[in-house]
Length: 415
Image (cartoon, rainbow, N blue to C red; front, side, top):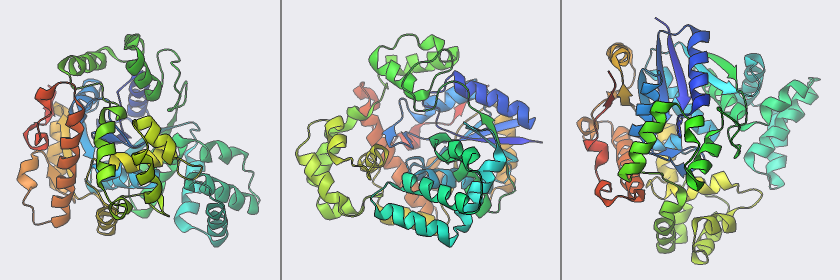
């Protein structure tokens, strides 16, 4: 039995995802495919365009057998913690043989070399990293410079490494392998070269286009989607839109976020994840002098404080997560459970096996674990429930804005 694991957002599931899924299944000769998928919030610090249950249904209808949720503290985190949280779940459920990710450079050995450096953190690498951060560079930029410096120092031709180090998709791949190494996991990493445009391109480029460009298309005109989405995924999107449960964009919550920041003290803002070095002053001042989401973001961003980091901080207000909570989660083992969002008949077979070998609880009914003796597990579920209660406030249809949907929504089952 070969089990393929994927780490995904499917925001929304498009033709590029279908290509990757089919290629990965073929490459790994997989009998089963499961994915760890971001829930109602995504890694770049935005709400997902439709809710996690609709996106799980898309995945199942396109060939995934089992969908597991990546808890919101990790789903909306930096590349390092996003990767760590997802890989930790794949490792702990005990059934995954392969982790396949897309990349701009399909050379797993290059990823492995870079991941080794980041795990071992040689002194010369750390010194350059510290110097670059001291110049006011963002962490990704400083790390890229430090890696190039270390490789050059060792006499390595860095031309083969530059494309890997400088691409956002490749950075996630490096973090996946780094997490596998730190966990001493038996899972084998493999990569498939992406085709067509980069994941954050805003331009539609034929049948395979980026999720970013597709979301922009949805926001501006909602036409031509049949050219870039599988038909069953387009049907699910249309169902959600017609019901008034989407499309969801950050500006759906701009008044909610602005009002919360204006109500918060600077000390409370300082307690949010990723707030440091007096950012609370900048955030507070921006909220007092902004009237929209985009204006708020623009007033906070600097060369060091990237848009993605700022978005994670602001949207993080909707999750109730504090930096203390996040530090405790990481200190005591990361994700405490594997929560099933959806499955098909093959997924049911895989779930049965997982229940026998998993090192963490498998959750199919959230209400059963609200009184768990594991306090950290209970805290994670509480954060997830509050995050969903906030997310549904962005629906156009008020009938679907009720709280408590984490406990009333059933697992999605596809026959």
